[in-house]
Amino acid sequence: MSARSRARGVDPVRLEVARGVFVGLCEEMGDSLMRTGASPNIKERRDYSCALFDRRGRTVAQGDHMPVHLGSMPASVAAALESVPLGPGDVALLNDPFRGGTHLPDLTVVAPVRLRGSRPAFYLANRAHHSDVGGMSPGSMPLGTEIHQEGLVIPPVRFVRGGHVDEGILALILANSRTPAERDADLRAQLSALTAGERRLREWAARWGARELAGCAGALQTAGRRAMERMLTGLPRGRFSAEERLEDDGFGAGPITLRVELTLGGPRAVVDLRGSDDQVRGGINAVAAITRSAVHYVFRCLLAERSDAAAAAGETPWNAGSWEPIRILTRPGSVLDARPPAAVAGGNVETSQRVVDLLLSALARALPGEIPADSQGTMNNLAFGGEHPLTGKPFAYYETLAGGGGARRGAAGVSGRHSHMTNSLNTPIEALESAYPLEVVRTTLRRGSGGAGRWRGGDGITRALRFGTAVRVSLLTERRLAGPAGRDGGGPGAAGRNGVIAAGARGAGAGRTRAVPSKANLVLAAGDVLVIETPGGGGWGRPQRRR
Image 1: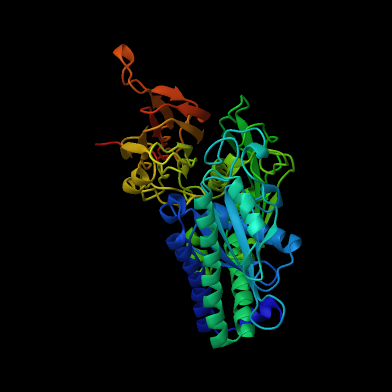
Image 2 (image 1 turned 135 degrees about the vertical axis):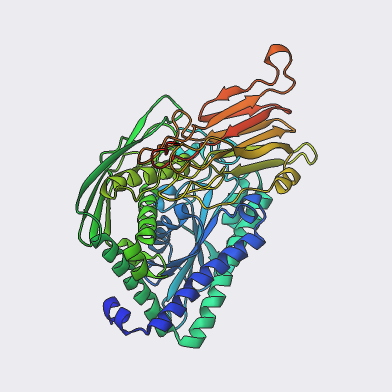
């Protein structure tokens, strides 16, 4: 039975229940991962994502997790299925960006689910950002020049064999991390999440039958494709170009230009990114999976917001069918399709954000008045680590910081929130101070940083940390030279700033903040204060004059 005929044949009520089942089990996997994870990055910030795939490795449903993970995870599943024959009770593991991964701290596990017969009926996968996987600096998010400086590279391997963890592979991973106990616990939490998803999937297969469940998956994928085709058909025909510029790569190259030519017409779209600059020395290169993830995210937002398509799409989950009408062209060796041994730690978190800005700029030409202003355009990546003065053991931490959201027609931008390719939370001050030798001096909204306009952009935040011991710090940030652009006459948001206040400063320089570049590896002393001010969002529309 073809996917098209399945979509016609499945009862709409049954299909909606199936949608809830599939999305719900992805959310349940996420809840399991959050509750059993050890690191603040997973249990507090929720820097993870979970998804369900069909027997061919095509996405069926996703949890409401991290867009940058979810759109790139199909490449990980494809690499795992190509490289690792998965028998009953097996689980594949990988992080290699050039073989399905994104950047090295993101570890992905993939497991088959056999419901009837010898062949897998579905695959489950989850990805979690680990706070340290080795490399030249704590947190595995350094300003590096090649991938080998960023941490341990794991090609697709069989991590679990017949239900038993391969202790040799686990030992290799733990030996390369500064925080092995935390890595062990987080990896086992990822495996536990797979078990939770499989249990729920088996429960529904027992109720409906494996054939019915697979049929609903195919019907949902067809529904996703049709909804996207309807939305695209309603867009203006034409070619719409745009450019964005990454400020620098941390090693003197910059600005780095991203270019798109977007072709719209009928039920298809072509996103041509081949005109973007070559890959660079510093780690802001994105692999093709990350670029595709950012493009898919933009079209998902467009599908949700276009009123004519939203009613047609209903609550259809975002899946492989939704992507079929979108053709994405990249050039190998470019900053949006990097080749090894390029450094890529920041491509996942920084360049992905700017690809979103790039696509929205092109769409603003196609849909005047409908596209919001730019949000902060960065994840403000902060990683640090050292030796804990109380235990004498190494520690490592990573977080992204919220900023201002772009305003839109009829609504101001949201302040102090993560936007676009990230969907994580902040680490509560109590959790941060109890886990690491530091004091949170300040976490507050950066008032007035949102761009002016009829509707103002959202404000960024100010985060100040005083370290209680010597630490090595890595910063990967953007929008430090120019703030996010406004739209339709709105003003830009304020640019971000990074700085350090030295411990024990005396005299005229006391309390002064020393500026720090957007991308840097730092060594700070006990008592030093790191200050990060994140960008505000752009404003929308010309400010109305007061009478």
